[in-house]
Image (cartoon, rainbow over all chains, first blue to last red; front, side, top):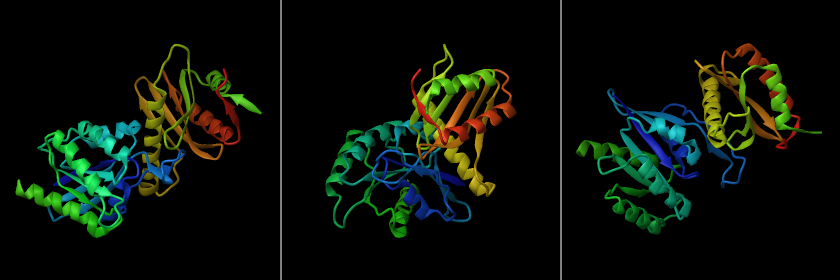
Length: 172
Length: 129
């Protein structure tokens, strides 16, 4: 069975990095040079696609979408038929937090959705205030997904997210 | 010398029938210039975002599946087509796109859009009418 996992979050939250890290194939990336200052050189305008083989019967398709709302065309086709959603939030970034509510609504995340939130760009021991703000926002929606700090650059950190998703799914 | 984008549009409209929209956008989807025929309206931001996404996907497909350099993308419908081609403008990677109406001639469109994309690389354009 091919299961579809979406990686969503604001610009620069680490979606492309985490997919490159997790994928067992060369990930498909659609990054282009940014023409405005967004705090980094490249930005995703199409889709990132990676692939993980879990066992003989299960593969995960990893779909990263652009962070900018104007690319919601891509959001529309990625959100169909999702098995799980990973939301990445940049630590101490108000724009990233502000975008969270919009993403929850757009991707129709509710108590039945398999979902994990990863806080990225965290210095060691940090991320507490962002975690508190995220949990508060989700509670207001009546949802309480696991929230972790994650280093998108580290394979082990990225894998923890996938293992957690699988564990939650199996415990249902 | 600066040329208005409106003039560029008029030139291409005189060569190709049924042109509806000509758009130049940055590779990351910010519209630079858009010109439509009278009476035709389009959401410029949406057109720019869509051409940016589709071109990026086409480039990735060209690289990974065909192991070759991307040149252009064309979407054909029963009512016309959307043609997108890479270019550079003022040292920025850009996409030139054209929406065409009834019975488009793809070979002609490809020829003139290629020519225009090359011209834009060295041109200075303005939004003046």
